[in-house]
Length: 315
Image 1 (tube, rainbow, N blue to C red):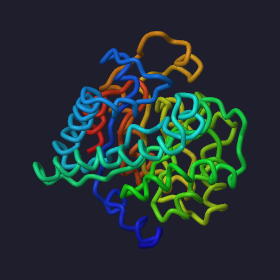
Image 2 (tube, rainbow, N blue to C red):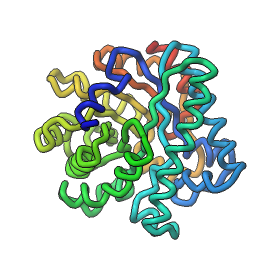
Image 3 (spheres, helix red, strand yellow):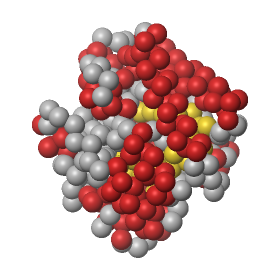
Image 4 (cartoon, rainbow, N blue to C red):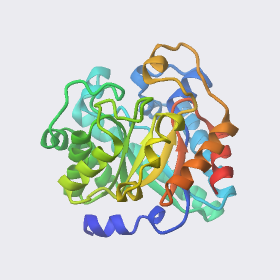
């Protein structure tokens, strides 16, 4: 099966709404009192209790989606399961490959069980995080270097049978382009999600439009779609008022609960979980600006309450 065939058959691009989960890592830390080393939720896969906690998380969100007649996207808990972060945590490349493959099997099992129970359509997405911090571009890679860096994780997801990969919290265009190249080489669909600062620009200084158009120009539009994550709607709504074909490429939103900046969130020792109903209302406004919006979920500080409010407002 070719990469293009897989891209055009993603169900979230066929007119049916899809929901994803909320901010898994902040929920685990602040609500479940689980210590996550470097936000590495994948380490919970190593224990029975950890798996039970993750399954409870996925099921609760998938059931919200089902209640609103929507499909659900199962993002693997692997945002930190790439080479540099893995090495920092003590995992070599072989161990990371096994973790990434196991994560696909784990969420696929939950997806299949719920499909048998409810008939709900589910998409398994291998979640990729940035090489760097996420909020700070740091040492930027050219797209070729980014493709080489992210290829092992992308290939592990493809080999394990994931339906797609999603790269979250990207802070500059070249890394996104590299991931798109890696996905094309592996024959798997990809969604690319940028984060923005309070001024609506990527941490690199690029505008959303500039980043999306640059990646599409370099890769021939290889990404199935783009998303925005890890920012509050007030940070980017004004940016989306600009007209242009580039907006039709944005098909997903996973916003933060808090209006705080990235720097403020990094410094905060308490969770700002905002107002779920207000967040839902803001998603409804975003939907009016993004007619192609097909996937809604949450990021830092959000949980089932926020996802429920968003689903109710949008669906």
